Image (cartoon, rainbow, N blue to C red; front, side, top):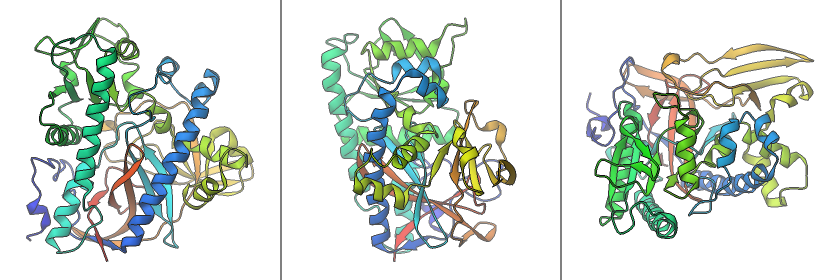
Length: 428
């Protein structure tokens, strides 16, 4: 059956088909909401970003013991205070929301370190809307992304002129890097790289596989003998920090030492990991409960949108009921449980099973965090194998501190993971 999926350019979105799955990744149907609904997602994301930015300062000013209690890798802590050209803890991030049974938005996660789902939101969503002759919520978002990447290039170039000496008088390469054999990472990295090339045609913008990355005393050495002045990395910081060379040297620490010396800029900066740590939402909620840290309007936003979140140590004092238990460094729904608390006891009410568990690379977590379990509104959508009922995860990308493209995933399961489909969003 002919559909908009056939119009998707697989050079831009190379993972329409996923090996091991019966259905293609995009749904055949689209999801419609009023324009005001998308305005609300962006407003909530914009305000939450300011709140999270404020809480980041608390984390950075706290003793190292506080970070360790949040399961932050001890050898990563010295690299979380340098500051960066944009003056923000994360430059490119994605807020994720679900809809409760009353249709209210509840923010459940932020990906502040290595957000994917960009191609779907900034490109494929428009293809789906155009096929159905519908208006869509991301008109102008590609232009926003171009302007943002141009600003990133200009601001980092200014910073390089002050600090970077490796290429004095020579090229100023902005390098986009990932492991090239992971299709989603490769597609996302090249999508951003090509968007920056379009925004800055005069810029020296290159791709480099992490498999081919070499570092020396002056930074990231490139094949032509120059050094990267700026590096976009689609590789989680909590994994990078513990990587070693073939001879056992601490590659991650050596890499970040060069960053701290100002040899290159990182996009996203290392401090993005503060927000990526799942316990960070517990910190924000704990500050909210103090009744003193946030302003009245900030407290209203937290109460309205932020899913109540708790540290592991808070769990014995919580009321009876259902809570989601998440590992601090879990990804793609791995090792998520819904637990039912009765007095001091808790039993597993629901467990998330991930088909490709061993393929999900993430750091082993020493701790977990908890969130109130949000019973979600159900939706019906069509995929290659037929009609399915499920739940939505609604995302909003932040370009710096500005809300931009929105996107949706549809999952037949209440806790979304790798089985989720891309679902185009349109306007009623």
